[in-house]
Image 1 (cartoon, rainbow, N blue to C red):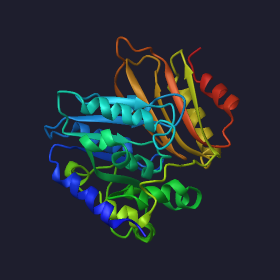
Image 2 (image 1 turned 90 degrees about the horizontal axis):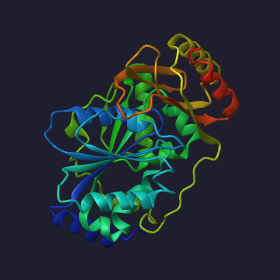
Image 3 (image 1 turned 180 degrees about the horizontal axis):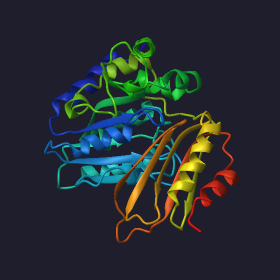
Length: 336
């Protein structure tokens, strides 16, 4: 049985300390819309200052560039998953933030799409330094209404992200029918019957729907996972890999669109997520490309910085990826 007395004591202690920095964990499977939600939060006129910690799965960081230019400070961790190999980095970054004289109104952690949120949440209870200065406000899980059934079939992380959620953002509802939406909500409710479900398109929700909820309940988590405060192990699906590529010459947009369209059409079932920052020929702005399976999108996100190398970077996350083939294809998109 879970130690409900221990949970009550820890929750009471957190509630009694008014100067603890609230921390919101944004989680959700690859391509659900976490970064879009984060950008909406950072561009709202709420008058508050947040520190942002972004975690990626793979050898090359792109998400940091996909976060809008704002007054907030962004810290990127791309040398492992936040829920396992780089949890120590998370503790060090949190420690440094909390020692600053300048106070943040809150900290937002965007996890990799492959993260199980349980070990991340543990950090705020098992590490004394973090527990003394910060409190977990809520775990917000962004769910892709279109692809959730497939993800629940092949990913334990997708179910865990929903199970541990305090708030569920059911995103991309414009891509499904009413019947499909009803069925998806039923699947979510079978996993988590308590968390409020907020429907959205392009993660368009008010800031107060996801921040300042004071919703994390340790008692509920201990009922879900009695070993929550002791367990510290997490393994990923070894079939999923991340591959990153960089090219130095500008990209021909027509060549790229033709190549990526054919690739996603042929292999999109195995390519869970594609994202990149592209240097289009003749353009002074960075182009952000993103795709989930066969559904692709992109837009310009601002000029290249003076001290930033104008290189194009592309990241694939999926199964049975052919590195030489992907590298050759991307390199062929460069101008002659």
